[in-house]
Length: 159
Image 1 (cartoon, rainbow, N blue to C red):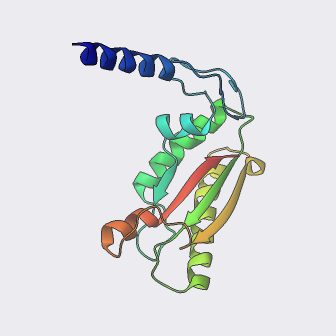
Image 2 (tube, rainbow, N blue to C red):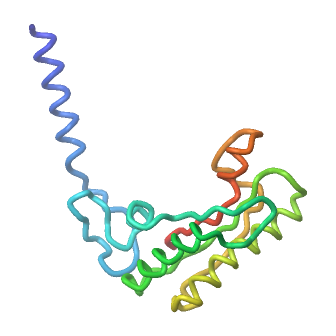
């Protein structure tokens, strides 16, 4: 009985500790420092990921935007318009097939394709930088099509 009571008390303490945080984290843009009920700061990276989506995917050996990619970029554009002080970086990534040089160039084309689309939707080009990581930053490990598909992406991050 005492062990159960002690366990319940410990669980209650852990839950109470999770409910309060003095660390607001760094954020930029409108709403910086203001947390929502869910704890996500409007205009932050967490807000982008949770409410819009931070990455788009590409077919093999391509920098052409799919309809899914355009849909995500449309949402990113609207989000960026809502937070006009936020700047982002778009990173182009590739799967691990191909040479380092080829994948750096392809990653650059992917990042630029995403950036150009955002700009065509009215986002100021001064707010969007690009970088290519080629095949150096995989999000999925493995030598199979599922992993390759996850690694062929462009990821938007708040700067």
